[in-house]
Structures are given as structure tokens and as C-alpha cells.
Image (tube, rainbow, N blue to C red; front, side):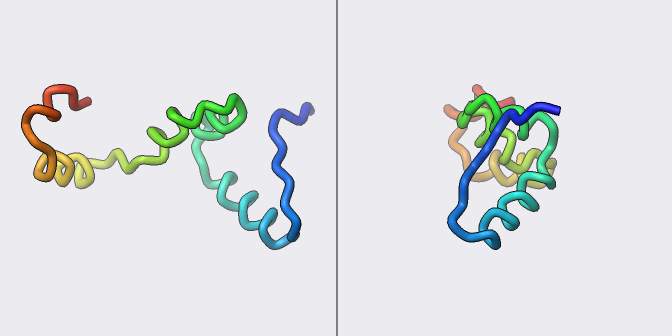
Length: 69
């Protein structure tokens, strides 16, 4: 096994909370964290279900929807 990412916290409770947060992430999101790709990390953090997408369409001007996924 090899250490690929490390964060330091002053309090054990903070480190434990962060560990539990990251454990719930997808493999792709964890890989983005490891390589430091914050743009991808934010994209993967977005809700991608149909409800989110329909709400986005309703609140986004047509000019921006052309670039929609």
C-alpha cells in the first residue's frame, strides 16, 4: 500500500470528520482530490440527477443552455 494523499488537522475530531466525508465519495472524486484537480472535484460534487438538471434548465437563460451537457 502507498500513501497518495494526506491532510493535517489540529484536532482529531476534524480529521475524523474529513475522513468520513471522503469515504463517502466516488472513486473519480477521490482521484480528483489526489491529483489536486479542484475543477473536476467541484464538477463531480454537483448533483447530477434529473431533478437537478430540470431545475437548472428552468433557471438558466437559453443562451447558456446551448452549452448544456
